[in-house]
Length: 295
Image (cartoon, rainbow, N blue to C red):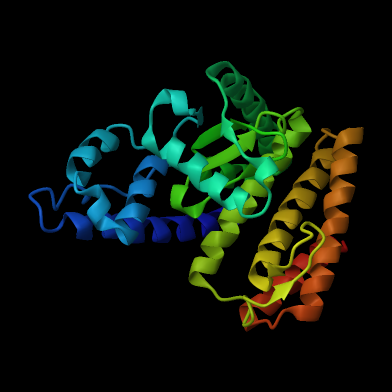
């Protein structure tokens, strides 16, 4: 529901703006953030750093003046960015993701794509946005709200990902975006994670979120909370791909992807049904996801 997602995103963003205001409070620039309502990936990155390691960004006021001029909030044109474009946050995002990847599978290491590859990725994603706007308008509104920057990367194994400290940016392998169907799936997948992150920031869904279980998408045990994240994104992908057929965008590839994600969703919900200790809100979410999975 786009209106609810927008409300959650704005509440979350206000908390980040207040964090930057508190860091600036002791300086002459204490009111620099007063008129800021939304943070693009670059400013969001600095808000996260300020929250954890304020001493690392003693030059924050000067950097903020530069960044505010190019802050990318909602309803701005989607861009594709690379490390060659210069923003520090892009290199930091790739390094952070590589650190996470390295803990699981070093063969998935990523590096920034070149400018020509990035431009081709952006063209594919924009076509996918148009298809999604026709097939599932509500999800398209959420994509426009939550995705400001595509970060194309090169990798033999990695597909896509996002990090909450870089809100508004999503990573995607140039190898992954090999069709319009794949691009639609990518947008639904990563915004699914972001939407559920926002939901979880304000609502508790499971009592045993740290308990480890095995679900169909990962061979290694994962927390129940992470398994619920997976189920939510699987729902988004299967629902969106199903709607493509209803709006005249069906294809053999679309059908294959839909069946795969629907089946994985059902299996993942089976795992959650056996292992999750739900809160009342979690019971409602699980019931809604199950209803869609078996519709």
